[in-house]
Image (cartoon, rainbow, N blue to C red; front, top):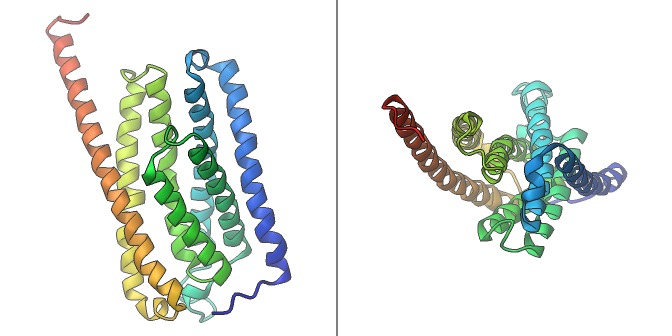
Length: 267
């Protein structure tokens, strides 16, 4: 495997990682300032809840950027069209995909550092596994220049993160009975189904129909792409099961509340 790094990559990759780290710090502080001034509930949070509140601010920002860039590169740019330049899809990359990978590594490093520092308050072992596998896969694609399309597809799954974070925000703000909480729960269910379940079905189908290209990857990359995505997919299915249970529970509570209201038994 040729891991030669050109002069452009020697500047672009470290700069992108640094941008990711600085982005997290800037959004963390911006979230803190805005929340302090605009949300009354923020003052009533515990110190640890304030840390998580701000942490979820930059995780939301990264998720939006990663989803937008991934969607553009894979679906809009034409980089991975079947008939472009007669080159195999597995070898295609661009400066934008390289940059997004670097920014994401910076984000995962920052978030992982905070998770370890406050462990387990910001996340348990499953988050360590998720972040570790994500950084491993991204670094492998970045250094080898292989399978950028597949890594971008996995990054697009971050599109569900804003819904997860909004659910947490509404919970700690005491707004679980608000209609927005229910609507967000439904959006999370649909978003997770599309971005983390159906998309992975397409992911594995694409790998199956292009398996001759997948086999051409160097040994470590081949075995990684055959193990890491299925592991992440299994985690997504497990979390989807928990989301589904939570949604059913919330809908049952909402239905029961409406029934009580109809019978004149409200508080």
